[in-house]
Image 1: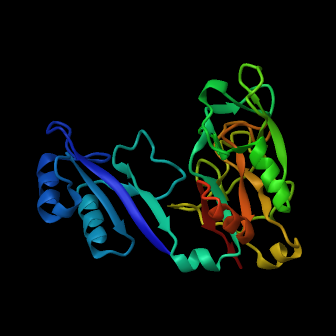
Image 2: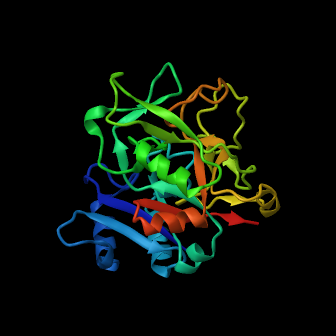
Length: 294
């Protein structure tokens, strides 16, 4: 497993100086002289994408701090719009072949969309726009975290005998019939509570009873998140191929204490090695990120 840090710095107007992700021209020119590898030909920005612990990364961050800039190396809270000294830093996680092959379970993420969609404001039912449907069996419902599939794909899953499957019908946005039934994937098996710290948008411990709570997030700077579960409780569940996290994650002000579902708030889906191997054999466009049992 490796961790990388990524951010972009641009040159500011001479009258502005250094602030946020912008450097005054003299400081920007010094960066270009000292770290030319971060400047692609024909671009007008400094693009940093280095492995955590790389001495060059430490040099760059130290220099930026000396110019009065502060890296915001946390997802939550996000950089304050009022603090012009902060700039956003993105953390990226990659898995080695051994990490993937040795894992027993994975967080499932689709690579593509089934089509444009969301969920109706008055119901918890997801919808797809008929004119936007893609020719693929499984994918995300629009840009939401929800995952859906065709009726044909559902029947293949059921025929394969995967345990923990659960579905909810997807409707069309305009109420007219879809070309075939579509289904949101909602496992009826649930994982034990995560060992990861859970936070709100403000970066403090998540407290659903707080009236002003604005979201529920896994406190992990890197993407994809590394989900951690208690091994003994997972083993006690018995064999399963699909399960949902016990919490729903995402940002949707006011949605957590009312119990109302929102398209931005969905559980993570956890799948078995058996499903991963089955999917790879069919060349499905899905991502499988190892989870940790400890």
